[in-house]
Structures are given as C-alpha cells and as structure tokens.
Image (cartoon, rainbow, N blue to C red):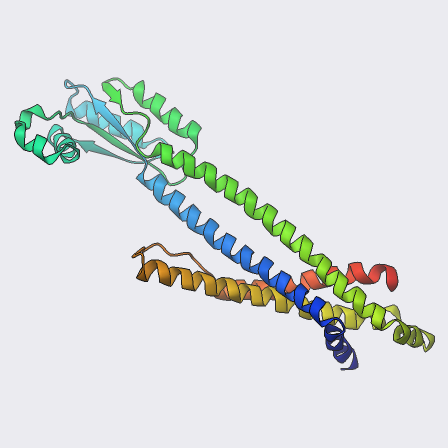
Length: 292
C-alpha cells in the first residue's frame, strides 16, 4: 500500500505538468476515436458506392432471347459481378423519359423517346479497383451481340475518387495517431523525471537501507499507469460525447440519417490496456538511466 500511496503522491509533485500530460493523452485518444469513427463511416460510404456502381450494356436489336440468357450466364460467372438484370426497350425508354424535361416529354410522341434493350451489370461490394472496372468493360465490349457499353461505368468515377480518399485518410490517421502518442509519451517521461528529482534524497536513503531498483521504480510505474489510463479513458469519453452530439445535430437540424459509428464498450476497454502500455513505456524510459 505504501508503494501505491507513493505512486499517487507523485501525481502532485508537478501538478500542472501532470495535468498537461493527462490532457495531451486525452486529446490524442479523442482524435483517434474520432478518426476511427470517420474512417468507418467512409468505408461504409465506399461500400454503398460500390453497390450502386453499375455498367449499362446496350444490345443489338437482332439479339434473340436465347442469346440474351447465355450472355447473362457468362457475365454472372465473373467474380467481380454481383448480378445482371435485363432491361427492355420500354423500360429503357421510361428511364430516358424520366431524365428529360417534363415539358419536352409531353410534347414528344412516345416513339420519339429513344429506347434500347440491354443489360444492367452490377458490381460486387469489393469490386472497386480501377483495373477491375476497366477489365469488366473490356470483357463486355468483346461479347458478341453487344452494341454499346456505356462508359465510364455509372458511379465508377465517384467510386474511384472515394477509394483514393479512403486510402489518404487511412495513411493520415495512422501518421496522426503515431505522432500524437509519441509526443505525449514525452509528457509522461517529463512528469516522472520531475518526480524522481523531488525524491532524489529519499531514494538515496532507501538505497542505503538496501532498497532494490524494482522497489524504487514501483511508485513511478504506478504513477505512469494512472496518468496513462486517466488520459486515454478521458479522451475516449470526450470522443464518444462529441460523436453523440454530432449525430444528434445531424439528425435534428440537418435531417441526415447517416450517423457516425461509435463503439463505447470496446473503446473504453481498449483505453485501459492502452493507457497502461503508454504509462509503462514512459516509466521505462524515465527510470532506465536514473534507476538502473
């Protein structure tokens, strides 16, 4: 119990430095939670864009029903294709009429609106790479009976841009998390160094009475772990509160149904071992030279 008391006592040796350490760890944890939530939302949006991406394949007028069924079977067997749907001339004409100005549609005879039968090829969720999209387009163009492959594929431009943005966000998140945690580690080291300076005479006396290095280091390890757990746990709670407030604002003020995801239990559970790991790393660095 004395060692635990000494560990907690070390927190008030340099109170402002301890506070700066805990706040810095909290900000780092908060940003990591927000970054993870934003990254998860971005991946979800990428999945939706992938499901929405499709290629329109217009067929020649003389292609018969039996040949169309064969084409659907050949295309469906590709691993990057989720499904293939047939669209009749009338269905295509109706879709074209929907995108024309209403006044123009009313003024034109029904037969004047273009319509051509074809196939709608829908990608799988994970078929978002540029090479896969281009490969599928080339495959469709080579099929006998195909008239036009509408390109670029519907939704693919947005899909490619979003995929590039996701890659950039991933790298940025990793770099930001590493820099934040590395920087806050020095706050932990600085706080522990101040504690050792204030207890220098006490530790010298204890050494004369046979105190081991492990006995002298134990309060520092306890102090570091408390700082780490308090900082990361507080940051996680702050991040979760920001996510909750943001979702409430998006729903009530902007009527946005898409919410930032959060994982309260898992985040808090990860903050405890994470805080202990950061604290122990700082304690090892701080005590390695002064208390060999």
